[in-house]
Image 1 (cartoon, rainbow, N blue to C red):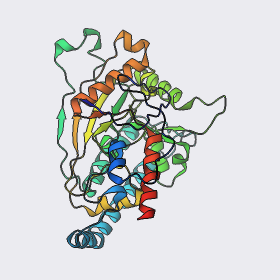
Image 2 (image 1 turned 90 degrees about the horizontal axis):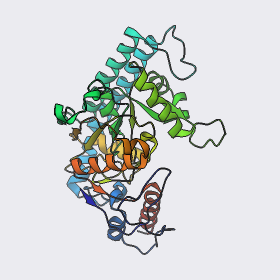
Image 3 (image 1 turned 90 degrees about the vertical axis):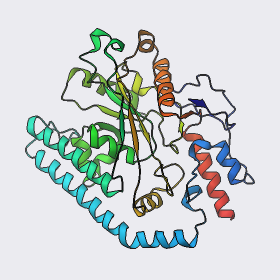
Image 4 (image 1 turned 30 degrees about the vertical axis):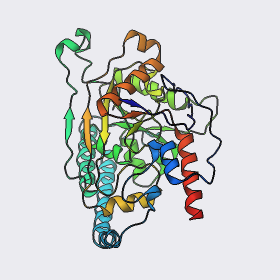
Length: 366
């Protein structure tokens, strides 16, 4: 585990802690004369270092352009069609399984028995198929999720296989597909997602938590309140799906770990830590400083993509961690950084936006 000592200012979203990392004055903006290299050093967690450069707009050789054109003509259409068919297939499964079932309009169908099992199994199979279509043909998993018996308190044996949530570093939208292919968890999404064609019903069947992030109404529980409530529900109902949480709140280039928000730790429930890494040769699947359409295009044009997974033992909070969610969050963060060889950084979403604005300014000038 290493600690990033760059000089950009840290943001402090609700629940973040500085830990041992230095607190620096907030940066109001990036000067226009700052060079790309200096920006990449200052905002290292978001800097792309693949063949396509900052924001995917770097210079390419003639051979790289030819390869990209060929993939765009042959590979891209096939993968797009296959991906759409997989989404439609899952939607049809969800539609059939929710026939004559209550709760669909409220955002959470009350699926039981074979209906619920069909939705979960289809989700895992089709998510893995989608990963295959995207070029993730083989996914090596280092499973450390079963610690030695002497390391687990006796009163935790029954809890070991039922953590309240999966806590993972956040690198790409592909993260969600991987976790769906193995655990079928629910996740937090904007309320507008529930109204999307196809995806809306799928997300409801997965038991997603829909939140109105901008709402300031007094009756709004907020993201942390909704997550805590669901974690308590998971601990009491074995049919309730685990939640997939990315405590960093945004994506990085995969080499760094940002400060954790405490929403996932307020319920004091055991968690399943998972580390994702994306080795690459030309294009990095990390979604750091590139717009979504360009990223999807380049990802689908790369014949083979790679992901490596490390599943750690279920993390049971100590009494001190139960009393202080910040301590709990910081200790889990250090564990992920150590086991995943990730660098701790105290940058956040605010600095990511400053970095993107600076890159856009430099690209407009060039």
